[in-house]
Length: 246
Image (cartoon, rainbow, N blue to C red):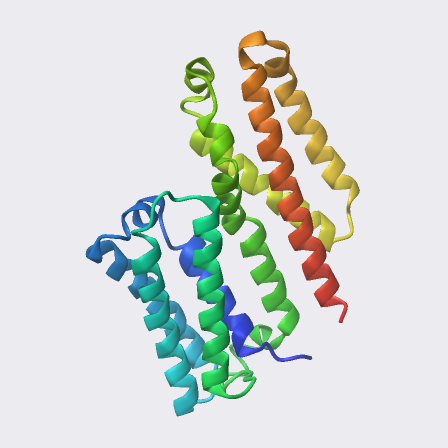
C-alpha cells in the first residue's frame, strides 16, 4: 500500500475548499475582506484536518500555515483582476499549485499517516486520494473551467437566444456535473460503453432545439459546451487511471 504524499492531500483539500465549500457568491465577492476571510477559514479547517493525518513536526505545521497564507494572498490579488476569464482562472490555479509545491519543500519529506491508523486506514491508500482528487477536478472544478472557457461563446449569443436560455443556467451546470461524474466513473470502471449512452441521451434531448431556426446558435453553443465538458472528464479520468496502474 502506497501512502499518500503531502502534496496529494493538500491538492484534495484545495479542490474541496475552492469547488465544494466555496459558493458562487463567495467566489464573486472575494475581493471584499469579509468574504475573503470566510473563504480562508474554510481552507483553514481543511488544513487542520490534514494536520491530524500527519506527524506533529514543526516543518509540517509551517508548511500548512504557508499554504493558508499563500492561498489567501493569491485570492486577494486575483479576485480584484478583471475580466474574469479562463486565462485568469488558469493563472490563479497555477499560483495555488506552485504554493503547494513550496509547502512540500518546506515540510521537507513525503509524509503519510499519523497515529490514528484504525480511524484513517482508508486514507492511507494513495489510490483513494488519486480517485478523490481526480473526481474533484473532473466534476466541480470542471464546471468552473468549462464555464470560463465557453464565456466568449455565451457572450456572442443573440438577445433572442439569451431569452430562450434564461432560467436554465443552474440546471445546465448540474447536468454537466452529472455528465462528467458518469464519464469519470465509466472510465475508471472500464465501462466506456456507458459514455456512448450519455452522449446519445444528450443528443436526443438537444435534437428538437437544433431543428428550430431561432435556436441554431443556441444549439451550437450547447454543443461546444458539451464537447468541452466531455473532453475534460475523459482527459482527467484517463490520467487518473494511468496513475492508478503505476
